[in-house]
Length: 150
Image (cartoon, rainbow, N blue to C red; front, side):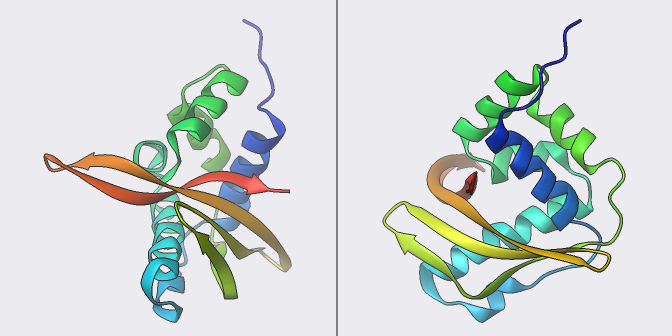
């Protein structure tokens, strides 16, 4: 069986998941209103699902369909398995949106997020897209992470 490395975007995003998410709970959304609040909520949900190591929720509800496909194609495994691998040894890390770090433009957004792993801190920019999602028999629009901006 041949193992292929994930694409740069997929690998970078999985690294942010592994470094940035863990057992602490972020409430970034409390600092925002309107659509920026919805974007921050998606990032809070990503951290919460990561802290529970819920790869199914991350792949089915929090990552865009295009990113899930990119992860699947580049890693030669399911998104769930790739995310599980990235979260395997994560302890208590923190992911939060920086002040004034969200820019919304129609159905796309960017969010600057600060992640901490021990004493190391980094700021990355996540790209998000608003996608339709079926929930409880209804279709709703939801912000999902689509890429790590570079």
